[in-house]
Structure formats: structure tokens, C-alpha cells
Length: 252
Image (tube, rainbow, N blue to C red; front, side, top):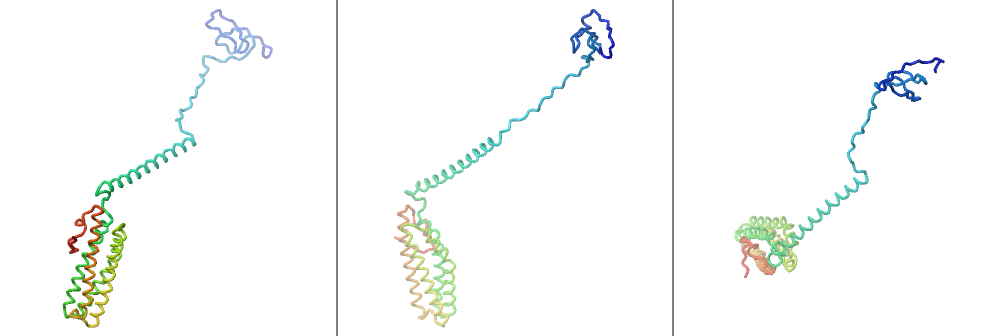
């Protein structure tokens, strides 16, 4: 016993009030603080706190970094495939549309270029008419001014004229190049008429040759345009839909 002391504990015979020593296992009163046999201090079981069970919070399933990279790569790949398929379908649809009308032509190169050329041809008709009218007047200054105005108009529209010619392909391409050359020659003739008017000459004899050449150039342009009309028919287009009334042209 601790300190050489002896313990004398009266035990009841009621088993409901007995328990076992936590050290030696001897029977002791349920409420005893020390074991009468070995002296070990007892723990009050009735007031022993229940152990707290800690439950870890649920953690959502998050893919690991390598899995996330793979998933991202697959999503990007799927998007790229969808875009590529869309582009292919769009191109195929455009091609089928081109092949589905006019015997393989939605609108031929000759017709498309004529749509750009027609407004320029109409504009020239107005400029030429003004120069021709001044050529019948006894006014050298008016003749020079009309020629300068027409020549400046050609220079201003020359890029659009060339663009229209460049858009043509196949049999109509050289014909549109001829029309560009005709416009260039018109500009040269107009420069000569301007010089004549500046020097005091009038259309009453002084510029007759130049005015006559402008008329011949118009005839050449009309013949070339009618050749282009033939190409348009070969490409499945109706020239009447593209050669405008303002061009003052009738093709057989």
C-alpha cells in the first residue's frame, strides 16, 4: 500500500454497486476513489467524458492537374474540329451553289466584270457628249475645259477600270484589257484636244481629227463589249442583265 498504510473497505454484496479495479482487477465499490488491494486511483466512469469523434469534412472530387490538362486539351481539340468542319461545309455549299446554276456558273467572270465596267462606260458617254458638243462651238476655252474635264475623269476612274479588268478570267480577260487600252488612248486624244483649245483652236475644223478619233474609239469599245457579251452567253449569263441601257449599245 502507498505510505505503508492499509485500506479497509467494506464491500457490499450487491453486484450492481461493484466494479473492477482498473489496475489489478479486484472488486471494489463502484464509487471508490482507490483500489483497496493495490491502492490505484480509480477514474469515475460515470463522469468520464465521451471521446469526441472528429469527422473530416467531405472533399469534392477534383480532377488532378494531369487529368485537367487532358480534359482541356480534348475540349480545345473538339472546338477546332467543329470549326474546321464548319469551314469545309461552308466551302462545299458555296461550290455546290456555283455548280448548281447556269451550267456550272453562278455568274461568270465576264458578267461580274461587266457589272463593274458598265457604270464607267455610262460615265464616259456623258463626258464624250460634252466634248463633242463643245467641238461644234466657236469657243476654244470651252473646248479645252471640256477636254480637260473628261481626261481628269478618266484618270480618276482608271484604278476602278483596271480592277474590273483584273477580275475577269478566261476568254473575257484579254477583251477587258482591250477596253482599258481604249480608255488610255481616249485620255491621250483628250490631251491633244485640250492643247488645241488652249492655243485658241476650236472644234470648227481645228480638232476635227481628234474628235473623229474619239468616235472611232467608241466604235472599237462597242465591238469589244459585244465580244464580251458572247463570252457571257457561253458562261451561261444573259448579257442583257449586265450591259446597261446607259451604255447605249446593242449587240447582235
